[in-house]
Image 1: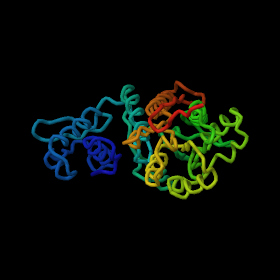
Image 2: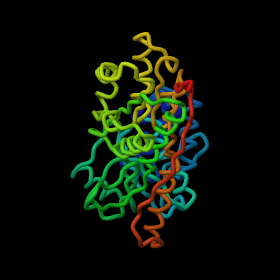
Image 3: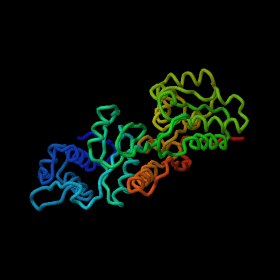
Image 4: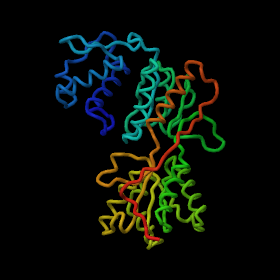
Length: 346
């Protein structure tokens, strides 16, 4: 199976692999794709799934069907498209694929294709930048990363400049995400609260700032000590829980700056005989759906689809000469209550 999000339908995973091969030049204009039976054997799917994958390629303008002869590859110029923009992201979570889906929907509606670059764990660097520069795309959406010196506009997603930096971005309101989560826990009667942030290895510092400020506004004087700043890997380990319960043995709520470590924490707490939410409430940020089973985590939806769609809209405006001003846009967030936070009696 191709390197695509494991949470996507199999036909989309197969289609993504074929699109990548078309854009990389393995399949050229006029080439015949293998018959659907052959595609099924190659990717380990049935013929119906392979048929749906080819249908996705047809719908996106990469090929046209030829009865009984498989799909005929065509260049995107021949499909009536104005050009292509790129999207670079190296993550497997559905959260990030929703950004790509939002970008694709807007781009296709405006007559552009979206070329996906990257694979799980992929990083940038000069060799990759040279590949991007030669790819023929008109602009790039870069998820949680930056690229310098490319001959076309680049917009970063789910990322924004630090003080003293200046580059274009579309992001959700990270600060408000942390603040909303803290306010919810406080409204549910929790005062003995801890927030775990992996700001040391990610882009989540503003979430911790928002959480901290909400605690301070509520009169919690030791708010800074309630913010545990660590790396993403450590945030998911038992070490953090040991530290929390050693420091705050009567903690009633533990919040995380994203859903994956929150889900891990729930399992670790249950293994230790602590019930969620009866003994300890747990919350996260991101609304990453694959981590909400079997427990529906209380979280903050950061609307990745809207982030991707807005970024594509602004990037295409820039490409078409409609937007000379810098691209700096922030998408609102909202709380999604779940089953992992309980209301305390006053």
